Image (cartoon, rainbow, N blue to C red; front, side, top):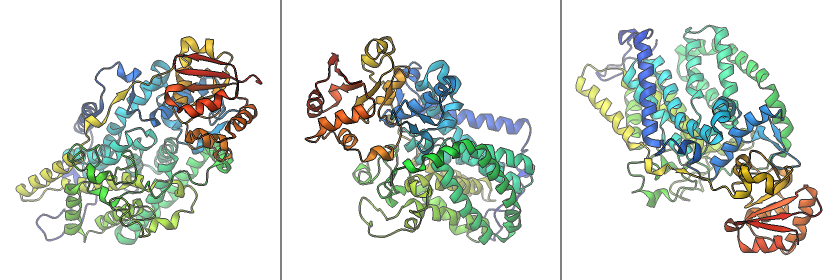
Length: 578
């Protein structure tokens, strides 16, 4: 194994074979893996576990709206498979047109991965269990990668934590499984390192890396795209800055190409729906400016962080994105460690390449315009503006690139921590510095909760057949509310003209009825437009949840003069023409 270069400084990282530290195979290594996984699992339970086991299946982890969408998806994949429905186009939502899931955050890989849990205990249980396991799996895969590089347990354990329990991860845990399921990334890097170090056969690398990449695409098309982009940038940087690695990089390209080719073959069914659904994409899926990293967020925490998060809300409240997307907080201790590593070991060509990639990703995460505490600095155009017209890449949220600079930070710190100086006091200082950096990014358990979703009686399984007989096509108001969760709770007993499963299809985005329903601002002609919309889309019932809607919208629907019944706070209007 090749380490960072020697230099004359007594605290430098030295060239030492990993086998001098411990055996990498056998019982000792297996014990290290078991201990690491157990420690990460214990920490996740301490931070995020519910107060009772019952809540795992009855309440939703961090229910802020988005989790309900993903619970629907966790349910959809086994439901579609068991009932022989088209997996990627469903008319259960946006009926009668249907919805193409290939471009949405539909998490097919996670849906199939958790299928046994979903079939036995329900999609809420699957959502909650995977949320608890995600930081564990991410930290453990990071541990495996850094353990492969360093062959040291404690440095790998601490660095794995930095990746798996990063500010990015604890922010995305607020409800984005397609973003917090990041455990596949270190595996892909580990497989590549094993390839260029001849630790794995070429054929096995092609098979394993292609399967892992397919799973990554099936988890998040966004992450698969940005990982591919930053992987290319990383290879270019290492080829340019590390002459000793050039031949190995060139030799590996044909195996990477074979892996990608096999991935495309395995993804052909999915790619077909990507192509057929491309025309239905809105012009802009996510606005880039508000969803870009605020430079100050790298050293100012949000309320999700235990140390200083609440105290500094007078600054973090000016970040343009929400807490789920403000995940770039490295903290001053970690920034100082990274600056020290860079300063002391800049002559090392591999470290220089890693740091260069780190800096490039940080710059990319700033988006198209610089943000420093709110709008300050927004007139400065950033390099990411160049790629805003590239398909796939232009839909990626720059603030989510913090995932990658946390991974690089973990690798750098793991390597630095793994090499011992002759000065034992300095070794303890290094360990203490990393522990302080970890404490600085620890999550605040009070920021995470479990909330029961209130399901109106009309959608509950014992009553749904009585009030919604013969699987009607319904319009549920509020329009972007919990309609998909209600559909899941009913046992998929109806279809709906709408549904919060991602972006609004292009053919509906400019519809005046949809615009009015989203804004709760009916126009003078709204009743006529609504009647036409319902007839055109075979909507037999409008289900209006009164306590969640403004009174002016109810008056507009009443003016349709449809037959109406009231169950609790729910009004059911039946279309007499369907």
